[in-house]
Image (cartoon, rainbow, N blue to C red; front, side, top):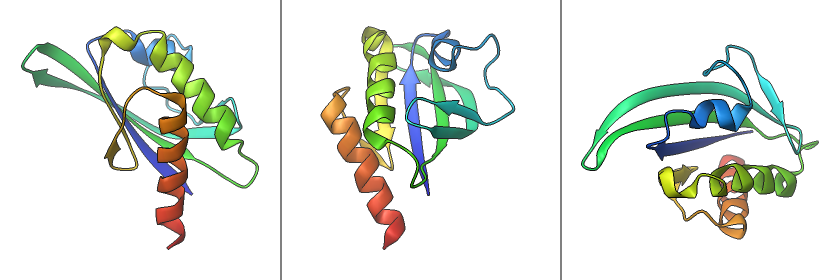
Length: 116
């Protein structure tokens, strides 16, 4: 199943930080902690009222082998380390705060929607 994640940030280096890569977006699937696979990456520039923002869209494949808890903890740490520059976090269509428990809940809720 796939979960869509959108991050709106004023940090133009966040994509590189997130994927620990010298190029963003990468043009190959990336396995991140928890064995989640980031298969789709897109970045666009948006014009926000507080200045330019980068919008990062991710498609994350979650399988039965994925530790959703480990993936949520990894994503939380990445976001928390640059929280002052994160303007918006949307997981599976729901806007959520940068909070590890909320990230986990939103991912699990997103997976539940796919099963219905």
